[in-house]
Length: 211
Image (cartoon, rainbow, N blue to C red; front, side, top):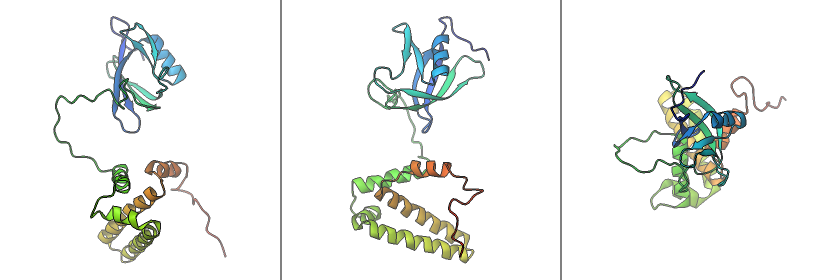
């Protein structure tokens, strides 16, 4: 692929966090910085103000590790997905894009990570009347009891072949598992990483004891 650099020998690159897809910054590369980025897998840009190469993180330690680099249909702009070691902006902000010029209310997309974050907030800052805060106040034994109860409810719903009830009970179980995970300082990411290491679809993770 032949990229199209501008009259100054530069090409813009939009940099996104590989996990959140948040836009971190927009920078420029010349051929040399592009080659170094591809070789070392660390984002290296060209500073238009200083007229020199710029390895992101060289002074701050907030390196950006290249995961993927994609060109647009005209080959005159790039999108980089990166894993970052720290804030992307020189101000200390996670992203350089913080000045809102216009926005409409956008419904938040549900995710387990979002729910886990809310659960953690109820643990860190208890809220009066909150069931989640109540569980943390009662402690691990109470949380474990609820996990066991909800697991039983899932089994009962499934045994009855009641799809709606099973969905309801699975949701209850998932919520209480997130509470337990928060109590034990286990993140959704850690569970996802553990699952990613296993061939859980085709193989048993643990062998049953044969008697």
